[in-house]
Amino acid sequence: FLSRNYFIIFILSLSGFAFINLSACGAAPAMLGDSSMFDPDWIIEVEVELDSDDWEVLRNQTRDIFDVFCSTEPPPNPYTYFEADIAVDGIKLESIGIRKKGFFGSVEPGRPSFKVSFNEYVRGQRFFGMRRMTLNNSRSDPAKIKQCIGYWLFDKAGLPSPRCNFAHVTVNGEDLGLYVHLESIKTELLTRYFDDLSGNLYEGALSDFQPNWVGTFQKKTNQEYPDRSDLDAMVTACQVPDDQFLDEIEQLVELDDFYTFWAMEVLIAHWDGYASFNHNNYYIYNDPQTGKFNFILWGIDGILFNNLGNPAPRSVFADSVLANRLYNLPESKAVYIERVKSLLETVWDEQEILGEIDRMEDLITPIADSYQTGQLGYLIDEIRHFVRTYPAMILAEIDSGPVVWEKELVDPPCWRELGTFSGGFTTTWGTLGVDDPFVAGSGTFNALFEGEQVIVSQIGAVAGWDPEASPEAPKALIQVIAVVPGQPNDTLAAVMIIVNDPSLIKPNATIPLDLGRALGVYITVDPEKPGSEVYSLLMDGDLVLDEAEIAEGARITGTIEAKIFDSGW
Image (cartoon, rainbow, N blue to C red; front, side, top):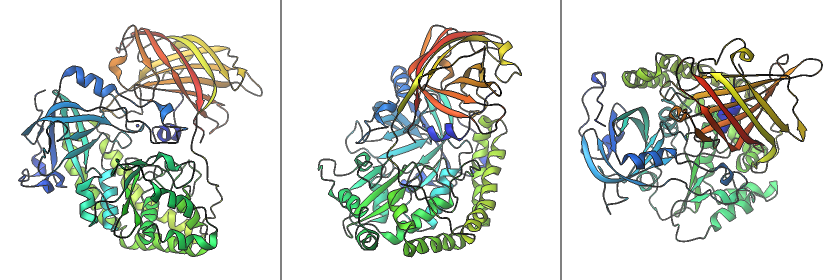
């Protein structure tokens, strides 16, 4: 009834061995060293076995969103390792560590992303030369190929990039489907690009070189030494006057490489990256041989997406301080523009990229399409369309401008409480999408929003499968919808609860609205005004089910109580 938009993407901008016939993929590579683990033409089979109680705890661990926003330090890691056995292409290893991974966009209980540590419980244990595996569920990319394309393009541009291929994963016999197998940003990766590995490696997640953002950088090496003076030097350099800025920053950043990194983020539309408004999904390594920071791409399942509803320019992202300062200086702005044009000529080879997309589609279809129920081809065609059309949009902006960047640097996002909601609902499963939700169900709707009581005259309720969820990870959706009388016309208010793990839909269940197990959204909209939707989050509360069953026509009753928040962006 009420479709979500970019808001949801932004916020979550989160057995026996089952063999599948992969004859089209050719023979399995001989596993004589760690390189075969990232053979681009092979899907590795990963079977994990762990205690069933541990699996329930692992998959339901999630972050407290209040630990992330308004924070002046790295958020605590809520994920713990559990002992397990693993088999990769039938080769078994016992007593490894496995934990959930993810910030918010990839957090999901049904198909969690994983970190595997081969030496977590057996000191020095390696698996084909590797200490770790990263297995991403690609929640933001149901086509599954965006990450490998993005890292491949960054590698073509000469930038440090993790290796990437695919894995078919089962846990305790449960088939979790196709994952992206990604090289962790650890020693193995750094060794390929740097001669000295003693430098500081930091992860940037909602992080920037500004006084009120810098505390969230998480130190990944040399943790026993609290010194972060290299970050402090960056903060200081980013505050100097314009006539000093380039001289100062060239002493601290591999600037030529950064122009390439920045331009490539723009070319792949990495809206959740460093230069864009989230200041997110990247690492920086301070090379001791140069004393300069190098940027490394990470977390790119949301790329290659042309958000036509987003008013931000396509030819530049300059929300972060380093990109902002460089773009607003004529000399460095010119370098950036020329770098974009150069990369479009040298790296963005349309036919080569389309060929790589074809190769990946042929490779993953035997597994992925069995979950995507015929949608995979359509989803991959959207990526092809992006590859063919996005460069022209970027060049058109540059040729008519270039864009004048007028947005000011912003403070880190911080939750602002807008009000409260409490209500009840009675409906039946399978009513989602009906023409009249006020016939399909009923309920109560009590909302206090920005100090005013929301007066409603009619209340309906619907429930069913979330139509925008990936077929391999179905989600339940419950909506309570109310008419708000007004002039010149009535408006609508609604709450939408997306339950990420449908097995939680059962009688007498209490489901926290924590973005991991369930996402709650409060929506207001004027049906007569397209684009008038206002989205807020429902958090610090619960969905309580009294009667519930996932079966067509089954009765669904319960209550919702939570606080309404704005993210602060």
